[in-house]
Amino acid sequence: MGTVLLSSLHAYYTSRTEATRDYKGIPVLAVNYKAYPTAFGETGLAIALTAEKLAEEYDGIIRFILAVPATEIVRISESTDKALVYAQHADPVEPGAHTGYLPLEALKEAGAKGTLLNHSEHRIRLSDIDTIVRRATQLGLETLVCADTPTAAAAAAILSPTMIAVEPPELIGTGVPVSKAKPEVITSTIQLVRMVNPDVPILAGAGITTGEDAATAIKLGANGVLVASAVMKAKDPEAKLLELAEALAKAAEKKSQQ
Ligand SMILES: O=C[C@H](O)COP(=O)(O)O
Image (cartoon, rainbow, N blue to C red; front, side):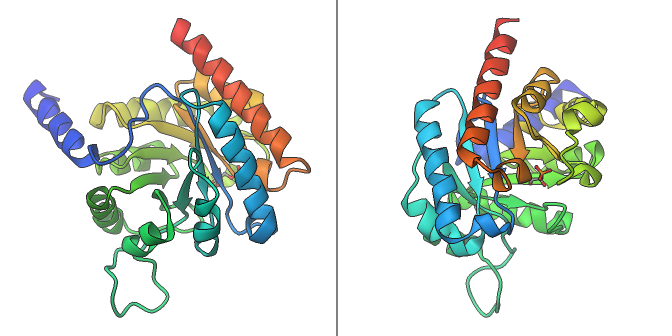
């Protein structure tokens, strides 16, 4: 790719992402609540309070993101600050006659700081991702776009979201970690995404269960992890969050010394 094209792409990314937070160098621990029974009401809030406590302890070391059900955004965002509350999905519509849809403005008003998009369990069209990412950036909301393959991740990265997550669908919820079972998915994603977007943080997800799984993702070059069942189905979610946070922090520190 020519230098001129690369520098114009870089300027384009900078203009599209300037409204969002700087994630450079700080590993991300993103927890997708999905619609697990623990995601709602008091149990969902208790997990968020634990994450908030850890986010304060690990301020500047780990960034915590909680992608919570739309029904929980108000409750959880009122009780958190350092742990950022995301929606799990947004629709490409403005407030108006759209029954059952989730406009970005409504998510922002409810207290969300960003939204997950295109999760394997809630896929949307590339053109809709483009619209939502652009509008979210204008509204000062972050976007974490999921992709099922390295090439899909690169396609999404061109749209300049705040972050990308790659997750092979066949490993989601299995407890078999992508970082060990399919490390090439992470390394190829990094390679392809970096060809089109030099800065976007890349998370790895699917089956990440232990601190070691998360640390391996960082070793492979990921900027963080996207987890769900390991936390939401844990007997002790606090212990699990702590295990993941400690491992990510150690792995990132080791990496920075190399
Ligand atoms: O959004 C999270 C992913 O789908 C990973 O789910 P999992 O950690 O249960 O495998």
